[in-house]
Length: 408
Image (cartoon, rainbow, N blue to C red; front, side):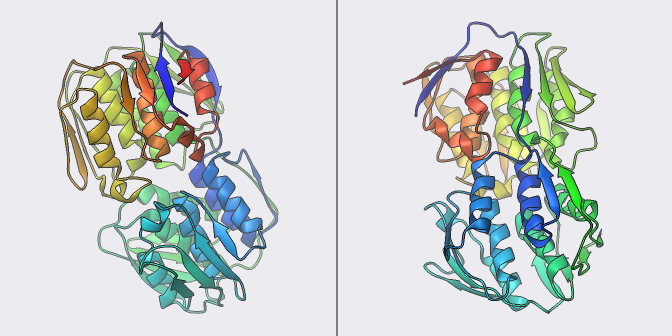
């Protein structure tokens, strides 16, 4: 499905309900398998969460998780710890080129039985569940936090708990803290101090109801829309809270640079274009929130300001190489941009070409990050259905905001 996007007005007045956080939902779905007396409300309606639920509930030996990287990593650890379970995890072609060796090595070191079925270090993999009795594992701290969270999530179900030693510099700390906070929330004894995470064994917990906060990564596209809109444009988003567990909540600070203010109300936020954007270069280290890099880069381009974004090394192994994809598509629109293996450098400019086809590379965030540019130019998004990976209602919500959407 290819869509053409444009708008007759850049004024926004809307109220949108955003689905639950994919990051929180996927963690809680694993914990619910360990502790069935957990009730979850406001679950993410993303493809990733659906794939995870299907794999957990299916009796089939083969689980196909498509593009869902989080599901692949969390399920690898989960099934490795389920004694007697045999499971083959496979996915899309892109998934079979996303490395999993670091997590597999860590799990093998504590007794897991995992075999690569094609290419060494990559899915698909065959898992034979074991009782994992060793209580200490080491893993590099600068890898995807999903590897670390995968170990943390199974830790309370292991006979001796788990001590996770993080080697070297630690990145994506907010996502590790999110996992830790969810463990605390359901009553698991766990600690993260220095380079050591300790999670105690806990066979049972009391009955729990957990309400998932809406997804801050999804909120980023509305921040971009407001930044690119007229003064006094406003959108209300539910359900959000001021003390969020999600690293992407840093949006409320970053988007002040673009004249967007965030008012926290009970169970919601109100975004307002309250002033013109700053002309100065935006400089941000996004190592703790890399998923919002695409949105920020497109916002800067749409406003004609420069940005220097660093801490982006994990974007090379996402659904696509997001840094190269950004360079390619922004260049087509008239941008002057350079990327390295961990950074993006966009020069200020005023020119935005019209009627450019944006390729999405099977990456939901490419489609959603570029959509707000419709407030500046006519734009076409190819394979636009990819947004369902994390945000099934995205195009309906864009229509509510005021985008005119035509299927080509």
